[in-house]
Length: 68
Length: 133
Image 1 (tube, one colour):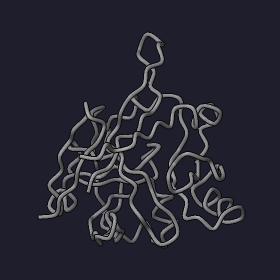
Image 2 (cartoon, rainbow over the protein chains, first blue to last red; image 1 turned 180 degrees about the vertical axis):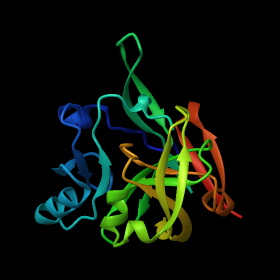
Image 3 (cartoon, each protein chain N blue to C red; image 1 turned 45 degrees about the vertical axis):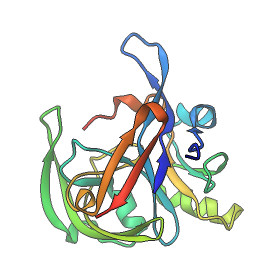
């Protein structure tokens, strides 16, 4: 069985985590295309720099605190 | 379909930084993908209201629903039927959108989504699998 390639976002997110900004990542999630304070802003900013469909998530320092 | 867990930074209550593997699925809308955690504990899928706005919804026209989390605080939300793709599979599920929901990603909960897929978690191997019924 082919091994599924790991996606480790730890280093990618770190420079943005203190600012709690939204990130637009490239499709394979190894590069930050754009940032924004809102979802709309990050999508608009990503369109300006790339034709790639971005992957949206927020940069935070601690992902384990989000339990609903 | 197999998908990798995402490795994300976490901080313990004692302040130690650890890494955490999270079953996060990239769901596809017309203009963007949204990372969403598969949450077996959530009865309904949830997303921040601003995502709903980004996909063209008028959030407050949805069916109102109060959702209570583990802190016992009810947050107002609005249910909408939402379409997106997982790979080539079109999903139509109910999603609760809330301005009070401040997670860094969406949540895929049991209602509708778990009716569409059998979901297998292989955390120690770093992947999870979705299988249609």
